[in-house]
Length: 158
Figure 1 (cartoon, rainbow, N blue to C red):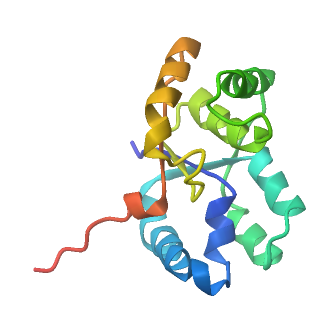
Figure 2 (cartoon, rainbow, N blue to C red):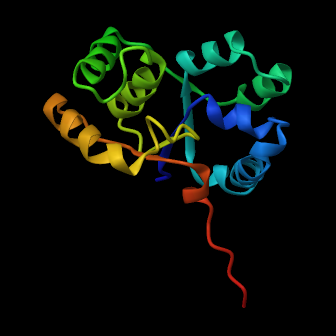
């Protein structure tokens, strides 16, 4: 059985980002997507798709095409309660409901990984313990919140 990966909006947006400052992240994202993603069961959510439609992202058509075959997890009212709980317990700032919703989706649906380039609020080693404690209180498993760099397989030189 393949591990489940929740794809947040940073992954497809970085795949097509053209800023030179993000080039190393874009290269890693492309490498993971093109060479490794088929090893996993990929999921996203309407929250991600809405962010990608409404936000300022160059290459929106290409981003949409990249995401078109990724199944979207069903919205359940419970997700809003979980996200609010995260914000009320300082897992996420009050102003960042989107980040809280992504964590809620990936936790509620028991994803193995939440794949993101958001290193402030999601893929942050300093937050992992806090997230686990809060999810434990909610009776939820905690996904590994990581960047594509952490899911790229090691190249074997034989």
